[in-house]
Image 1 (cartoon, rainbow, N blue to C red):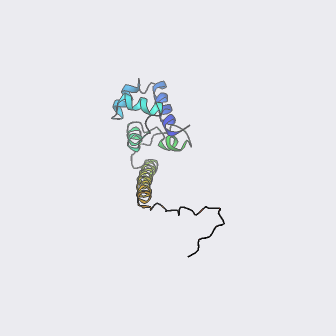
Image 2: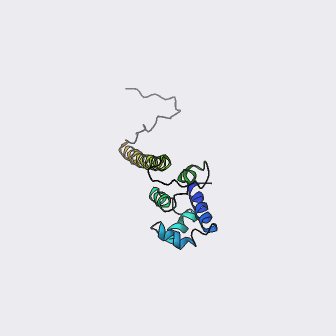
Image 3: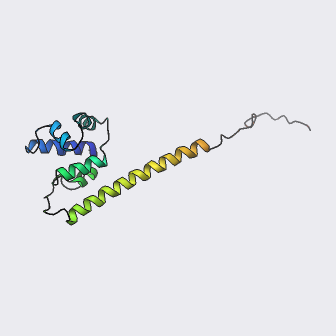
Length: 137
């Protein structure tokens, strides 16, 4: 199961628990629209770090670590203070993922640049000739 499906599983669990009524409500609370949620569900769009942050802010009991890695439980016991280690760890985790995504983007751009700059090798016309004839100077 990938992070898109785990994200939808969390939303569906929130619906089952009666915390949200439908995708329209959660989309509004996550500052997006129902179409974006549907696109994530259908795999047409990848789940963004920003959407994960908004999910954590709106629903602190949701485990972002579970959504991203599949490890642990989808829900955690909310901590009373936003300065708790769990909250700090989640923010560090999300920041690290964002940094890695940016680095991947830079690396992809560099690869494309190197491929554009790479000279095309020129192969001599008869390099693979099997003829035993020699040319006299």
